[in-house]
Image (cartoon, rainbow, N blue to C red):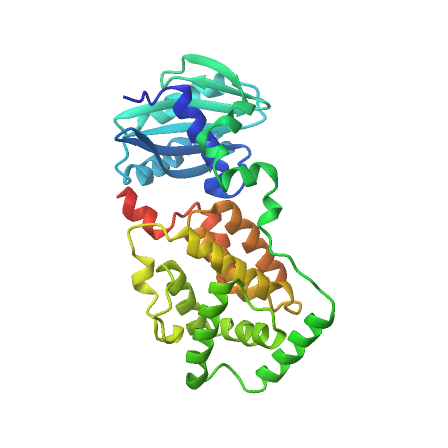
Length: 340
């Protein structure tokens, strides 16, 4: 049986936090739920609170609110991680006491303070359990698995390559101007565009400027874009006739994560579409890729692509939706189903 209040569990949970949120929290308290399935530690939901929030008169209320939300996961335990530049002191014991007042879980994994290059461990009663080097996080299963190690090495690697000038960019821009004169794709055109996009995903993405332009133009149509996302989240396949006829709702309530092999092919295709798009016109493939990454639970990729999409167009609603979900630590729908 796994002891929740052990350094093994602590390392796995703490290592997972940057990949859950898509960034390294600073001056923050993070509570992470977990439970043990047969032979396996399952890391659950996480919630973050500014550390300064526990210094004020409403500290108990703020902590109780987070604990209440996490208790709905029905997980067995939770672990407290504090990321701070503060020196370990009496404030740790005050925090442990405040959390213990409303602790809703049967088990407690302890409290860990990540400060500088050290991780300080404490029991739920505030008794020290030791100190370890932060580098030990890099040897956990989380940090050694993809895409986690990519975060350690270079999160910018998730950004799509953009070529701003050149013959191909000019040709795509010209084709987009021609398409804009006709308005959004017609009902007669979306079926052909659907077949084209499915074929391009299967072979790694388009290479011809006119095909790039047609698909960029199509993805700026919300019904086509949302249907494409529903298709990707549903596992792909070549039996779809028209993305605009797909209902996204079933894909958004499925009780399992999407197929990562399908998403890898979709990312490749969207990356090719974005590469030679004129300035501002890569927002759709970037926004779609960011949403799919968030849905897959890939917070690092989602954050990098979301920021890149907002660089193209800071008003693009799909990108702002992903940004808001990441900042609120909102898990994807399948995660909610799994945790309930």
